[in-house]
Structure formats: C-alpha cells, structure tokens
Amino acid sequence: MTTSKRHYHITTFGCQMNKADSERMAGVMEDMGFEWSEDPNNADVILYNTCTIRDNAEQKVYSYLGRQAKRKHEQPDLTLIVAGCVAQQEGEALLRRVPELDLVMGPQHANRLKDLLESVFEGNQVVATEPVHIMEDITQPRRDSKVTAWVNVIYGCNERCTYCVVPNVRGVEQSRTPEAIRAEMAELGRQGYKEITLLGQNIDAYGRDLPGATPEGRHLHNFTDLLYYVHDVPGIERIRFATSHPRYFTERLIRACAELPKVCEHFHIPFQSGDNEVLKAMSRGYTHEKYRRIIDTIRRYMPDASISADAIVGFPGETEQQFENTLKLVEDIGFDMLNTAAYSPRPGTPAALWENQLSEEVKSDRLQRLNHLVGIKASERSQRYFGRIEEVLVEDQNPKDKTQVMGRTGGNRLTFFTGDIKQLKGQLVKVKITEVRAFSLTGEPVEVRQALSV
Image 1 (cartoon, rainbow, N blue to C red):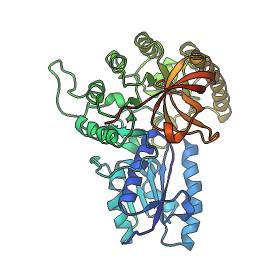
Image 2: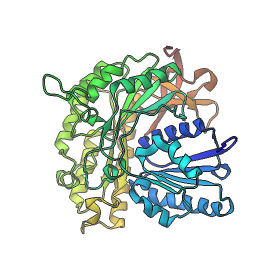
Image 3: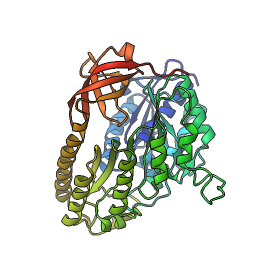
Image 4: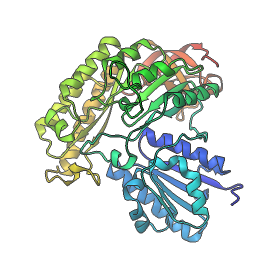
C-alpha cells in the first residue's frame, strides 16, 4: 500500500511512559512514509495513546473516539487506533463498544505498530493485547523536543498496589540492557540532545529481571550502577529519572546522585498517603517513617535538592484523621511539587471492589484542602531561589510571551527570561532569579555557557 502524502495524528493521554511510547510510534509512522498532521480531522490515521489511571482520562478517550467514529462513516479509509492502557484493559470489548476501530493495541506492542498496521491495511480488524517480550526498537522516535528526550530503561511493573491498574495493562518488568540504553543515549548526544530522562514505572526495580549476580549477592545490574555506566555519555549535559518507589529507594542511589555532576538534584518519589494503615491497605510496602528517612537522607547529601511526589486522597476507608496525617506529611516535608488525585476505582484492582468507598463530596473536599496546602508549601520552597543565580537549560520559546524563552533549572523549576530562542535553544544559561511563584520562576540572563558538543 502506498502511503505517499498520507497523514497521521497521535493524541497522548497520561504519564511520561505514554509520551515516550507515542514518540516511538510516531517514528514508526514516519518510517512508513506518513506525515504528521496537527489537526486530527486532516489525518488518515488517528491514534489515541490512552491512560486508565483515573476514570476521567478514560472517559475523555471515548468522547474523542465518538467524534472520529462518526467521521469514519463518511470517510471509510480513515484508520482508527486505540493504543496504551485502556486498549490493554478493554481488549476486544473496546471493539464491541466502538466497532469502527481498526486496531486495539496494548503498550507492550508499541514497537510492533508497523506489522499491526500492515495487517489492518490488508483488511483486518486487529486486537494485540497478549503479553510479549518487548524487543529493542530500531525505529527512530519522532521526538517532541530537540533538547530533551525520554529513554526507557524498564517496562512494566511487578508491584501489586491495590488501587493501581498498571501491572494489568503494562505487564511484568522487562529491563533493557545497559548497553542498549547507553547506545540510545549516545545517539541522542550525537544528535544534539542535552538532557535525558530515564523512565520506568518503577525505575528502582531496574535490572532485577536481568541475569547475573555480584559476589556480594546483589543483582548484577541495578539502577545505581546504570547511572554510573551512562553518566559520561558524550554530549549529554543532564540526566533525570522517574519514577522511584520508596520501597526500593536506597542510600547508595542517593549517594550516586550526589557524586555524579550530570544527575539533576531532583527526586520524584510518590508517597501516596501519610498514614501507615492506608499505606498498608494500598500494599505499598513502606511506612511514612521510612519515607521521611528517605527525604532526610536526600537532604543530608543534597540540602538543596527538589522533591516532588504523588498523593491520593479519599482511598477506601480513609478517615479524616488519616487524611490529616497526609496533610501533616506534606506540611513537615515541604514538597517542591506534588501531583494530587482523588481515588478513582479502576477495573481489575482489589480496592475497586471494597465496600468502604468514600463519597465524591468527601474526596473532592479533601483534594481541595490538600491542593491548597501544596500551593502554600511550594511557594515557601520557591523563596529560596529569589536573588540566586540558577543554570537553566533553554528548551523553547514562552508560548505566552514571544520575547521570552523558557527552560528548567537542575531542580526542575520552570524558568522564564528574555532572550532569542534561535540563539539560546539548547544552551545552558545562568539566570538571576528576580521573581518567584509556587511552580515557576522568572529571571534575567547573566551568562551563556556553551553546552558541550560531541
């Protein structure tokens, strides 16, 4: 089938892993000869890469699908694809709900998009949700940025948190080899990328599914060792990683982050609840005391490190006192950023079947109270930047003010300052901070440090 001058559009919902998957699938589409269309209504292939963490994200997908399903009745050659976690969760049931779909594919099949599409173009309606070993992808992703890039290091998750659907939809843990990860980073360095974010649903689990052991009995490969192994990749100026799990977070990892100058002083470690009984019901495998010790250790090695996290309110059976324990944890630690959500029952998870569900009114009230505190603490944390000189990696133009560029500090604070994007994109600029807000900064450029070239 010829695909000359045919267009595709991908809409991505959810986490960084989904964004990385979308970039890989976009690379497949362009390798097949398709061109990107900003407008889905001008596309011949529309792909929705979906998220099922919360019900509202899932329902939004069905709303989008409904509009395109109507369009397909007028344009039968339109190809509709649902990928990602909703696809994995629903499988063939998705075809019964939206029979206009051509392809339903789970996250583990992102690298197989070309083969699956070729089957669709031969006239088949395809469902690909069976567990597979994720093969290395030789297709170049179509990356959204020319400065920063995602690099997957481990797929899937073996944890069984009672609220979380991820293990059901993303499969078991599969670590990439250190050599494959370094090779991808080296190629990105050659292409001029300056910052890499290493990704995993539970990145601290990296390597435990790979063969081999050390004389001390440790897994031969672990995430701390991986950081040492990739740290000197030429051209890469900054390394970030997400997402960490408190159950596996070690002092050795913290020490490595303090020792390795390219690793940014930013840690994203979800705590989910500040109450031990709720954490036990969630099957998280740690206490709030352990979580506090982790943060204390980080601040002992790196006093200025930024800490971000995720939290859930309104988990089944959560009492007012238990919720207040979460507020106390946020008050005591003072996060730079906290992603918050009201508990949403998800199909196939134990907690969704429990009878002690809380009302939407209670969950909404607690979410508002938590968000209010988060804003206060983030504003307090931002004050430390005022008057300081921070190094900012320029990523793009400020879409709201064309006279400004924007980028992030090593601590992941979004920062704006006046400058020409054509001259500064991809450069490291020392910026004196003149204005602070809860989640962003404004400053004045002081000095441009030419980023290292390969």
